[in-house]
Image (cartoon, rainbow, N blue to C red; front, side):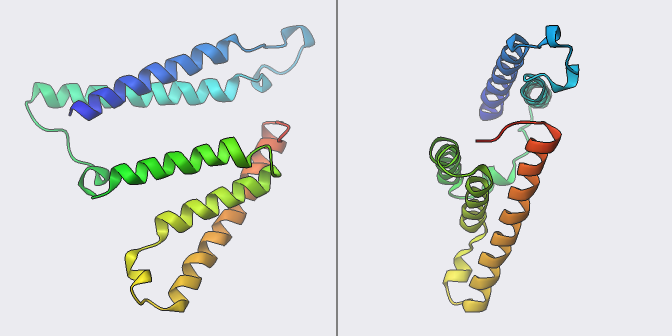
Length: 167
């Protein structure tokens, strides 16, 4: 319960901070642009969603405390090694944002990130323990196909829908 309380408060604070900063971004009213295309709209919505989920998590924790019950465990709570997985996720994400984006075309950086992420987290110890080459090729091929599709979709949405110039 304590982890849920701390996490919910962090989500609320971070989401509210993102919304506040999004509201400070220029709106370009003097140019007469569509208000749905201002730079802060997507980060503002994402920040609001994070804050709402933080409030929901806080409410769930408060209800559990009132009932003197434990908050239902999630799969991550039961899974051994969840902390290393979170740290590895953080490392992959920081590597993507800090090293790949800006140094490679956006579509390639995104594809590599998604492919690496899927390979790492879809890889099962059973594959390495003799599942055979076919299983390994299937995992790698599926991850590659998903990475190509996600990269194409994300690039299209940012360039054509959000009208964002990508690095």
